[in-house]
Amino acid sequence: MTDTADEIYYDPYDFEIDANPHPVWRRMRDEAPLYRNEKHDFWALSRFADVEAALQDWRTYSSAKGTLLELIKSGWQPPNGMFIFEDPPLHDAHRKLLSRVFTPRRMAAIEPQIRSYCTRSLDPLVGSGGFDFVADLGSQMPMRVIGMLLGIPEEDQEAIRDGVDESLKLQEGEAPSQSLKGTFGQDAFAEYIAWRRKHPTDDLMTELLNTSLEDEDGRERRLRDDELLAYLQLLAGAGNETTTRLIGWTGYLLGEHPDQRARVARDRSLIENTIEEVLRFEAPSPVQARYVTRDVEHHGIRVPAGSSILLVNGSANRDARRYPDPDRLDVGRKDTHHLSFGTGLHFCIGANLARLEGCVALDEVLKRWPDWQIDHERAKRAHTSTVRGWERLPVRV
Image 1 (cartoon, rainbow, N blue to C red):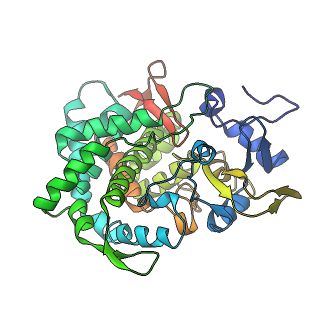
Image 2 (image 1 turned 90 degrees about the horizontal axis):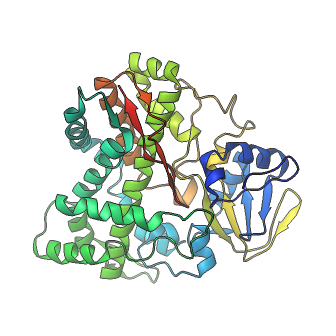
């Protein structure tokens, strides 16, 4: 269902809207900056200034009931350790452990392994006449990287990735009663935890087993098994999904804008800026849900406490109030600040890794194929309520 000339309709579960939400998001920004959807009982903010401010105000716009609309509506109780679904003080204790791992310096140190995974995926395809940005690269390299960090055996990595993918898929027109379906990879992760306790090594899982945190009661303690499981489920999901979509969007947007692709192919110093512009132009995770803890007012309208609200960062990234010519892809854009990784307390802890993976993937593709054309007939969208992008994106080279 799309909006008519007289009525704006935005539905995050509508596949037709999801295929190109930008026209309806533009109307929301211009005509209904605080939007109300009665069918699914949510409010939505779409302008950059509103979304940025709300993302930073965790006390009013809480993540503690989940960051997906269906989770908030279901009354789902997030497990301890899944800190993206927590607010302080517990959020800070759990996040602090991983913040020591996902630093720019530590991520830069694994760049050779990331390049090796790209080489492994792409070299066999040279001379074949084409490849798939998602199936051959976007769903492979991030899986190998997060598997390496967590110490997941390579033979198990694809099964866990596929389980994550399946748990997030939507049926057309239906709001899931509960996404993340709770237990993907849980049995396997429990086995890895038990194995690593007996066989420690230099990976993130061993570090999590041996580290301690100061919990909300001020006690110093080790992570419990339920917290470890939540960490691993979160990292396996977030570490695969968003980067896969970023790589798909990079291939798609540069395929659709050959002048911009040629520009970055000639000048590789633009690669980092290109990835930031792709993130701004098509946010891999474009909608963040929050639970409103107190009555608030936006644009003269009261949003009551207990409401669900969507912070549409994918719309905010195209707000003409913030960016000049926002609907133009420009790999040389000077101001590429965006909200694709959020902002404030819940800023994506894996942003440094996602950026690095995106840059390395683009660089390695351009080394082999500075030119490509999208095979639109075989391309296929992925539909979830958490990320937006491509399930398949074959190209001819």
